[in-house]
Length: 163
Ligand SMILES: CC(C)(COP(=O)(O)OP(=O)(O)OC[C@H]1O[C@@H](n2cnc3c(N)ncnc32)[C@H](O)[C@@H]1OP(=O)(O)O)[C@@H](O)C(=O)NCCC(=O)NCCS
Image (cartoon, rainbow, N blue to C red; front, side, top):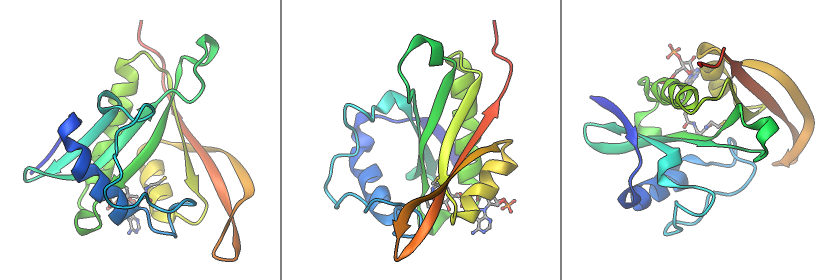
């Protein structure tokens, strides 16, 4: 059974293990933090992290953040990280996390949720498209990975803000 909930400080170790297992060179331009690195920091707080549990164990997370902290940008939040344990992928957890993040962004008063995804990460792009995100731009050759230039794709979902 899959359950989505807000993170707690004591999820730190499980989320750190998930980061180390998930952020392989093909899906992340930066190496995964070494095992034992604290997951939560000033920029990653439990209250901004949604956790997926599968049969009671942490199996995925999504991060919500305000990328540009000025009032004129307050209606835009960013899905700043999404990861599902490789052992549990393709069982609907990613989709539930993205939908829960949209719900959370709406509840916080946002009307747009944006994200960045590597141009070679087709499975994540398909997931986001299935959840209503559209491509708004492409940063060409933004990263040099394994001897190849890789694009960064900007995607977003918009809705009408609730009063
Ligand atoms: C991308 C990721 C979060 C998807 O999580 P998931 O739990 O496997 O996704 P879901 O099971 O909810 O799949 C939802 C949809 O995503 C797409 N998708 C997911 N995995 C896919 C794959 N291996 N091949 C093709 N499409 C895939 C499909 O459209 C799928 O819908 P379908 O099963 O009805 O065809 C997961 O693969 C992951 O953690 N990858 C590594 C980290 C990463 O790339 N994060 C995103 C960075 S922007």
